[in-house]
Image (tube, rainbow, N blue to C red; front, side, top):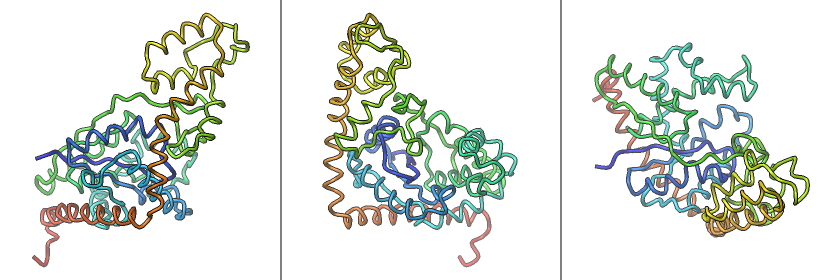
Length: 332
């Protein structure tokens, strides 16, 4: 039997090149190797977007389009909408009794995100508790493998704490979870920021037009001291070269360009035009497929509904086990 894997995204906007490199390419490989559930975590997205439900609703459709456009196959991967599986919320409620508030507040990922979003003590309770919600999602599907970035490893630790606590109190129901950290490179923002982000305005989206790709690449941070073509330039910290390292398949040519740039005699515009062509070759086919899919919204809705129904059946099985273990099966 194939191991079960759970992965997914918060639907707060369209997906970008960072998602493509960081997770989508891995999902394409994993859908042949695992029983893969891909969650569109709309309930989790509402923890810090509760006042903008229309944004989340539209983003669910956008994220589904991006999944299908890159090649996620609904016959191989189960794509589901989190909020449409109420059993996950019930499991979340039970798990909250097994976790202290102090433990959740000390989660480094939560602490960092609270600081980034400048919540202070006004942080929504749902946001603080989302590691427990995430544990419910993982364990609801009996997933044993979860791909995460290094910054998300504390979430998996939290999940395994809940596994150990639940099994100790109620008997062995869950297996511990293994985190898999993809080896893919992290794509920086076009502004040179450490991470490309939907909310940071520094992303190139999988649905961007040729014009948008061109404009964004032309805005990219290079070397502020490289003022003339003849000036020697720095490669380190130069976002254009970082992107060429990630996306340009001709590694030999990239090394030649680096040497020439360091020596002097190579302009930023030449490099940027090369990068524009490379990114358009990657994004162009995805964009075309996405536009084709978007013309049939009922088909997208059908894929999401079928996937969610199949996913719900799996979680219902888990919840029946949980209720029996917790002596909550009164009417059996």
